[in-house]
Image (cartoon, rainbow, N blue to C red; front, top):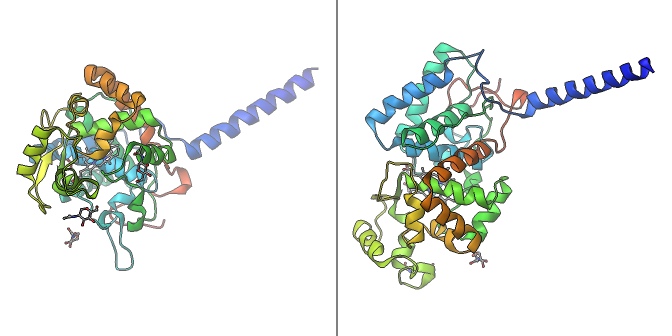
Length: 328
Ligand code: HEM
Ligand SMILES: *[C@@H]1O[C@H](CO)[C@@H](O)[C@H](O)[C@H]1NC(C)=O
Ligand SMILES: *[C@@H]1O[C@H](CO)[C@@H](O)[C@H](O)[C@H]1NC(C)=O
Ligand SMILES: *[C@@H]1O[C@H](CO)[C@@H](O)[C@H](O)[C@H]1NC(C)=O
């Protein structure tokens, strides 16, 4: 009997050991750098604060960067890679990504300091995840602990940006895409709230002003006063002007995106489509009334998004320069 108990004990020990080994190869965790680079998150925040001083809106870019990174090939920093002679990278996918150079320069400054503090330790993918969280907090969103330990990938392919949703998508298309990334409809409604900060260029919504679904007229579901204002800012063919996505409070992480959507003032077709089913429109109304609920759920959905397709252990690398793939 004693032998039997010992046997099963060894068995369960082996099972636990296997599970933890598997875990270390596939899971990210809060505090991954607490021994190897204890100042990592402080350094990210210090450099971001400098970037905010130069450009108060830059945090919106950092937040969007995490989204674009995670949806294309997973959260493994493919978005940061520069094109080379033989390869057009994600960031140069046509139509051009609209990130400011400042955002990539900002990542470079963070990386430089991290390399000086702890060489080849903190991945570019984790830098993006920390910077997105700090940006949310900067604008008044809720702090959350970022699981880390992501490794950087070894590929960045322009064509793969088809995994990003265009602003013309309807709810069905958005839901299908988010499902394919492991995110559900609630995550979709919640993460869309990111559009409570930041700007968009006119082409992202010009169809709703001038030629909706080929009708040569505006989108009838867009509030007419808001449409008039947008037409003033975006005459036909304008590709350079940027408009605030949440004109009420463009630099505050609050519920006003949802209030706008409930009053036909969502900027994109994709934003407004959240009102097209009872299930999603109820959620929108809930968030419109309860900013703290929105912020709490947003933090949770960000953690979830930050786990899409992560590489850990030997699956990836830690780039010395976030723009350049290394094969070690
Ligand atoms: C649901 C589907 C989504 C669509 C169709 C969409 C589309 C867009 C578009 C077209 C822009 C404007 C780009 C430009 O013209 O410069 C934009 C901006 C932005 N998006 Fe989204 N997005 C989506 C989801 C998300 C998610 C999940 C996040 C983050 C969690 C996010 C964060 C942002 C931010 C912060 C900006 C402003 C960037 C800046 O000010 O530079 N978006 N989005
Ligand atoms: C796209 O980006 C490239 C490189 O940054 C630039 O040379 C080109 O003019 C851009 N194209 C458009 C349509 O903005
Ligand atoms: C969404 O768009 C797709 C593709 O254009 C279309 O087939 C589908 O019917 C649309 N769904 C709704 C609910 O409008
Ligand atoms: C309006 O949209 C339709 C279909 O999207 C397109 O074929 C047509 O060329 C557009 N017309 C103008 C004037 O932009």
